Length: 412
Image (cartoon, rainbow, N blue to C red; front, top):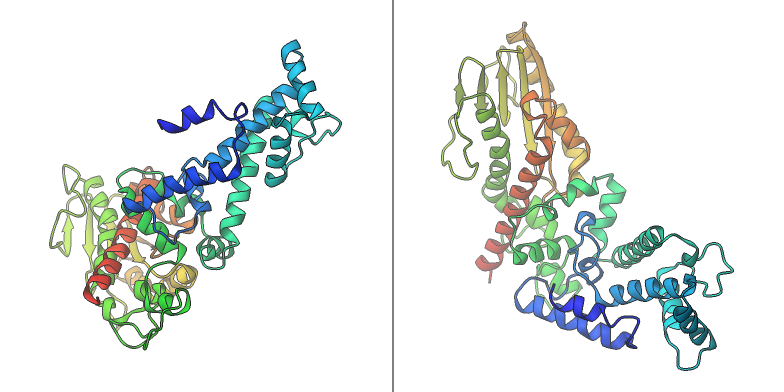
């Protein structure tokens, strides 16, 4: 915030080389490494595109230089001011000039057209200033995104978002909210980029000779990041349950407050043991409760059941945090698993309607756009659906990071 504005004054006036700008960006990244804000192997382009698109929102001096050079060059080319006309003639003569040449190089790198002679209608010099800045910035973001997604390892998470139909806005909601330390953000980014120090990563990427790449916790499968976060049987009975409950408590305590069971909001991470059944005149809420049924049903213990006395509606809420590639399959599994239970509930409560609410969030924060519509099925959650989704996502991500830190410290 303090250094960049000073440098901006010199762009377009002082002749900066690409190497000088690159080295200044490198010094910034080294400082981030020093304070654990950036993993040394994380994707560099991802630092510089906007946070709402999954980046860190850092200002790249190379990008800012190109942006300012193009903006200044467009003003000089379009201006009718006598002094700027002299500058334009001097630049076009090419004797000791650098502005138009630098603008042409920047435009070529961004994939846009810059015509200093104003003969091309597709040139940015033909656009209004607002449109011109928007086109340059859009081209810059597109270039950074392409560089990131073209990386064979770092781009996997972003490619999965596109291929699996996940919502980019919801998946990166945690970057638009406060409450996460810079070190934590850097750790999340490293995991999404796939550069966490697992045995398979050491063997295949770093080239370190590893005698056995099997998971150090379960000794059953290769130790990959997704195995640790979603498929390790050693963590399925402990860390996965803790992560699952931490996210689900966000919704549970919101329901308790909304229906007046708790007069004041309760922080979801504060309570210890949760009561199996609570209620009042408005509703009854069941947490991990085994329902008696008229016939034997294996899946009779959903995560949360809300019985709304006012609307005579029963909401069966099921939550899961699988790997991002299994989100769609897991949602279908949940609906099939509790199909018989829903049928039994309709028999037990013939005067109530029964609705299934399936909420799925990936272990690294991936979310489908349908998650919001699923949350809004519950009337008490409609006005705060996006807030609840972001809070649950944050709980899942922090649970995943806690698991990885514990795994690293336990197996060293």
